[in-house]
Image 1 (cartoon, helix red, strand yellow):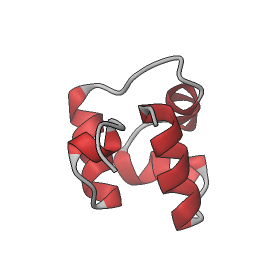
Image 2 (cartoon, helix red, strand yellow):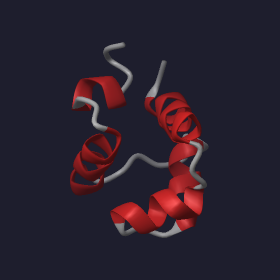
Image 3 (cartoon, helix red, strand yellow):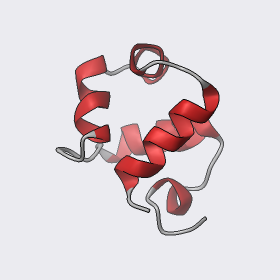
Image 4 (cartoon, one colour):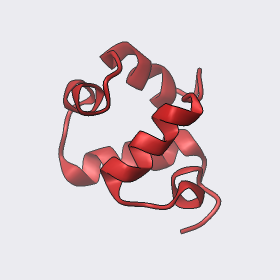
Length: 66
């Protein structure tokens, strides 16, 4: 599973919209859409905020670990 797929899984498991996730970590909803579409990867600071928000390791968020 790659980063985009993992992000979608984590977000849908929590039953939150892209807008809510974007507000929680301080980015625009369009950035979350780009991440989920696999068009962009987050900067390191956003990557860390995502891992903290979802309470997962960076490896798990990157899709390197289940």
